[in-house]
Each structure stands twice: as C-alpha cells, then as structure tokens.
Image 1 (tube, helix red, strand yellow):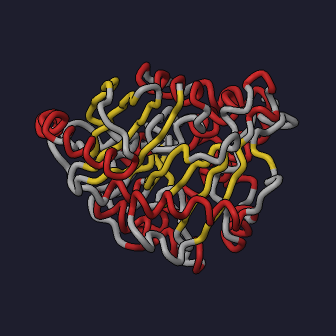
Image 2 (image 1 turned 180 degrees about the vertical axis):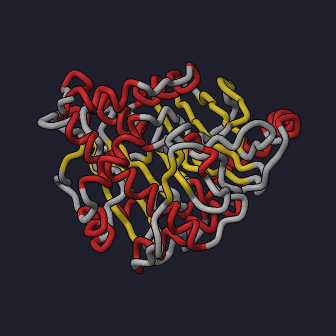
Length: 371
C-alpha cells in the first residue's frame, strides 16, 4: 500500500454525524477554524478537518516540547507502524470513543496535571501500554490496547503510572496522526501565515482587555502566550478578507490540548474583537454536571441572566433569539451530563453566539459576527 492509499484508508472510516456536519458548515461559513474554537475533536478527525477544509493540518496544533519531540522522533519504525494501524482502525469522532470507557472528571483533571509534568518536566511512564490480541487476554488491571475491538482499555482504578502510560500512548498516537496528515497535505498552501504589519506583543496587548472584561483581571497571569495569523484569503482570494483573523492564546506551561486555555480572536480587517473563550477538556471536567431535564429547564430560567451579562459587558439589548440549546461537549460525556447552555442572539444585524456554564452561571465564550 503506497503512502496515498494508506492515508485515504486512515481517514475513510470516520463517519460524522449530521449535527457535527452542521456545526462544521456553520464554522466554515463564519471563517472559524473548523470547530476548534470551542472544542477539539478526536485526533484523526481533527487532522481530517484540517486537510479537507483548509488544505493543511494547521499551525494551531500544540508544539511539542523539545524533550517530548525527541521522544516522539526516537520511536522505532515498528512502534510507529503500530500507532498507524491503531489510527487506521479508529472510527472515533469524539475524543473518548477510542477508549473502553470515558475518563471520570477526577481522572481528566489528573491527566491534565500530569500532562503538564510530562511536557514541561519530562515526567514519563516507566513502562509502555500493553498490547494483546483479544479482550480475554487483558488482565483488567493495566492500560492495554486490545486489537480485537481496536480500543484502549482502561482499568477501573488508575494509578499515576497508568495515567502517564495513557498520556504517552495518546501523545504518540497524535504525533503519528499529525505526520500522516502532513503527508496528505504536502505542498498545499496554508492559510496560517507569518505576522505582517504587527507584532505578537502588540496583539497580546490588544487582546488582553477583552480577555479581562469577560473573565476578570489577572486571568491566566503568568501563562504562556501564542499568536497565530489565520488568513484564508491568502490561499483563496475569492473569500475576501472578512475571514482573516488573529488567534491569541494563553496556555499553561506544559499544557496540552486537554488543558484549560483562553483564546481571543481579533479580526484583521478592522481590529475588532471576534471572540473570547475559555476551553479545553480540563475546563469542561471542572464544571458541575446536570441532568438533561435540569438543563432543559434552565434554558428559560437562565436566559434573563445571560442577557443581563451581555448587556452589562457589551451593551447589546433586545435580541432576536435564534438558537437556545443544551450543549454537550464532544468528549462524549453522554446523556444526563449537561454542563453548558448555548444561545445565539441577533442584535440588529450583529450575531452573538455564547456558551453559559450552568454551575457557575458565567459566560464561557462569546463570539461576534456581523451579517
């Protein structure tokens, strides 16, 4: 099987739900990064979205720390082949679908903590994830990849060593996925471009007031900042410049795609604020959980609170309500585990799309779109 055939095989088994197709379509219309603003899909799907929608894997993936990069590059070909086969057999769309069970909130938070030590301090597991052919061979006590059902099986009680093995496996699998996705996107122009006419420091300075307006003073103080220039008009001038934007990130030292981070979007056209958000599996795991019925009832009772916050912060009044829904994160926490509400309002030609954390009764993200 040649490289092209392998990569077609890698992505061909991913099936996307109608709901997710609608989300992607809405995001692409608005120039958003294929749903990456509020959540992150499973690894293989993330790569597929990047390749198909933007013709690249995207500069937005977290850069590997030097020691982790060396660890990835040191994998023998036999190990790389194993991870490639795991990806080829992975039909998951949500992050947790490649596991035998979802992580508990406590495990998700512990994983985020250990990932920071894995990335920034080189805290690696002593062993590797076990591999067996059939489920009957799994001892039920170790983190183990079972070839029979193509899933990573997690024991009921996971030690720090187990969690580090889980992190190491996930990091290596994502690394192999990114390499394969880059092969698919070879020689394709990228909409991620170098900064021109401004500096990273100036963009961080311009974005900071918007971040503090929504989340409070000194939020993410001491965290690393990173800036991306996303300019789809550079690769497709027919799009115009209305989708060109800067992404300014505040990330924890050693953070991964699971860690809580903050993001501000600035439109290149007029330097207006396009969005502000907190996101990440770690953030979602820290939120209080509600039943579907409780969350549905809160759609109406919390609406005045949401509108009051939007008016207080941004001055918008008297909206037309376009969407009000219980929002389920794509980490597959399942039914009766609602944590956020989503509302989309139209204020005289300006669309405001917000996420509302049920437990804290605070806005988690705000996006602005002109008609």
